[in-house]
Amino acid sequence: MRAIVCERFGGPEAVALRENWPEPEAGPGEVKVKIAARAVQYVDVLMVAGKYQFRPEPEFVPGGEAAGEIIALGEGVTGFKIGDQVMSRHTPGAFAEFGVSPAAETVLVPDGLSMEQAACFRSAYATAYHALVQRANIQSGETLVVLGAAGGIGLAAIQVGKALGANVIAVASSEVKRKACIEAGADDAIDYGPPTDGNPGRFREMVKERTGGKGADVIWDPLGGWAFDEATRCLNWGARILILGFLAGAPALAKTNHLLIKGASAVGVRLGGLTDFQPEIAAANMTALCNMASAGKLNPMVSTVLPLADAAKALQMLIDREAIGKVVLT
Image 1 (cartoon, helix red, strand yellow):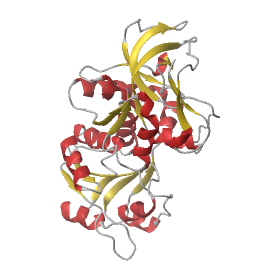
Image 2: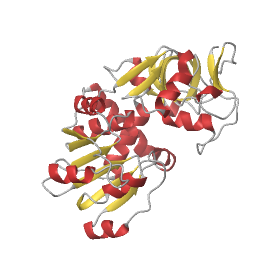
Image 3: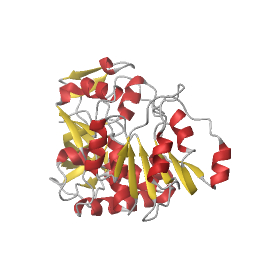
Image 4: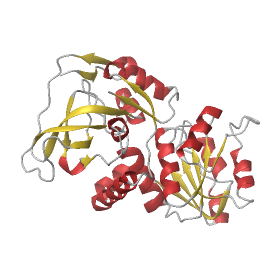
């Protein structure tokens, strides 16, 4: 089969298209999928670089999330049939024409989603739902501030937050990105503010202004570093900061006095931990999300669709932060 192969650890130049890569077969408890679309995620960038916590050795096929049609069932698989349209999980292996997915982690495509949307639905929306429901316990009417809002996971957080009744303020770095956040459902979209004294942003003043001085109830932070420090300065009483990553360059050194004064919490979010330790909650979350998508409440934004052969270009787009919404390979 045709497949994108990571030949060595490195940047996007480390992946190449192979025409005769061995085709996988479904083992016990697995389904074999003819893949129609594959999500490109920052996890793939890290895995190709050898910097992700799960570190397959080259040569391997990247890609963890896809959508396609079941063409074979492994021993013991029930609840699926040949021809079902599904969202599949791969560990890794999605950047190929065919892949195998554990049946327990395979889900029927919700009504109304295209294959491209389905390919990038699971991780982003499952992370957003877990973060906002289990970790933040967000309540209808609360104010959610989403940093890095124009990325695929940020847009998912906007939509899930709105579906849960929150007032959503998106924070993004350009007018084009802020427009995308409004189109995704955000109530307001602001920038990070002009640099002052070496500080890359001053969104805290804007958040306070838009909340009547109260501050945010929940802050979605995939950036870390300076952004976390700014976030601690615009909190409402009892607020929660959701820690999702460190795209700003490094983990923050938390000024815990800000958390103490506001009775606030800094809460880590890791979807893989939920799947490992509370799989029943992860499954219930996915059922809720699929119902929300079928009802038209969630609409994944796919900004770029590229052919499988352009996987290196897709990875570079994520590194350069060019993508608004999700990048998908077909």
